Image (cartoon, rainbow, N blue to C red; front, side, top):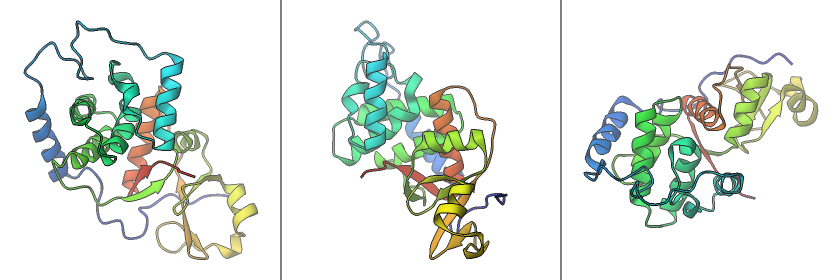
Length: 232
């Protein structure tokens, strides 16, 4: 199935990380930089022990991001910079759960703004909104796996279900969900029986798991969506 080029879905009001939003985030970042030059990105003094990200810790972090359990404990005493996209998602859930991790969330936001890779500004804006520093961007929540979206961008010929967050191949959509005769090209995606899909554009993604998540996040934001955990 030949997929059309993606367009912004339906009535998404604005691109994320607007100029005003980013200005507010940057202003907050300038205010929360610690005056203690010995403090690292996870709120721990450089002179204290910092645990590296071994496979067990990474597996725990991935699980926390995917399930949305807000397990921010895995971040404490470890450097945030190698895992900023995962860390930001976990911290967003922890903040929503009322956990006292504001300092850790500010550190993550500051590092995202400093790094400035695709998707970092969008995630920093979400953290700033969760911290009460600025209004949230008008993005629709979608339970989608950023890793699956990134893989689909690598491979091409994939569709994103804008209701369920499922990532499907073109063949799966036409063969198992709807026939081509039942699909329309109206609106900003493919629609049928009151459900809509967005073609996932092929792209040359950056190296690294964290950078790939950010790239997928930016594309979703451009379509008017923000990822949320895929809870059963």
